[in-house]
Length: 118
Image (cartoon, rainbow, N blue to C red; front, side, top):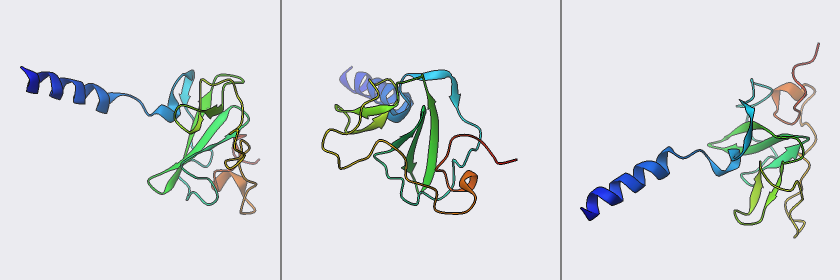
């Protein structure tokens, strides 16, 4: 009985969405917009590009649209996420604003959330 409960709980935890993506808007995951590009200066702690959460996972940039004003520091998880009050890391170690683009084409380096250039 205890093994079954433990396995069931493990299955639920593994199926849960990433804490970085919690409380995302109905739009959910963004189209490319640089997501999947190498991380560069974006870390696993993440950053906010307006209402777009960006963070590094498995060596590539991930992007998630947050509800307006909700991308910010999650003090319980110690990283930026959606569904927060929109504040910054109180220690100042992890800046809220994503780093400036590293290349001439911001759409390919994961630093902007306004889509491809015309």
